Image 1: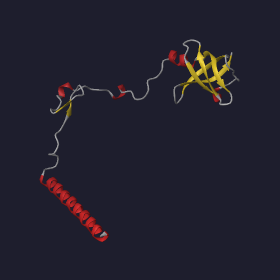
Image 2: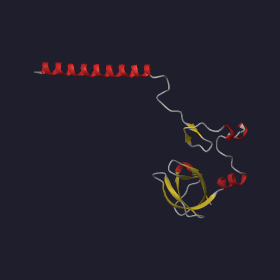
Image 3: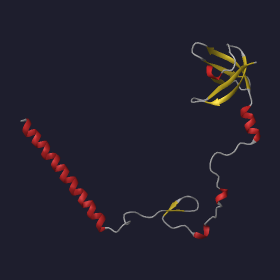
Image 4: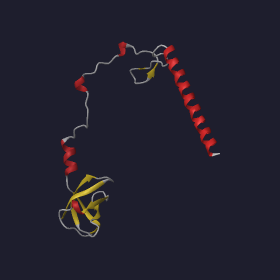
Length: 149
């Protein structure tokens, strides 16, 4: 009985292969009979960025100077850069020496920032007043270069 089952499976697989070959052959004949590119319509983009089936009017063409195109991040103004580099003041709300991390609460906006032992300049304890800078970490802003006041 196992032999007849195996034979049946082989026959079914061969039928499927023959069917795929036949479908492939039909598709190939269709491609040969149709002229190239007739199976899709052209789509144009108008001056407003919308897709249309009519070509755009050349009189609405806008000339763009290559030097006017800016790639990358815009430059910071002098005042902005100083503001981000300025030391902030805060209070250590929690610090676990065995695990090497804690949190500092900013005295200006009461935001809580994560601090790691690698970002410390001085040893800190809970309730110490400190100055620190902020850097973007994986989960948000982190306090770095932390010093006691």
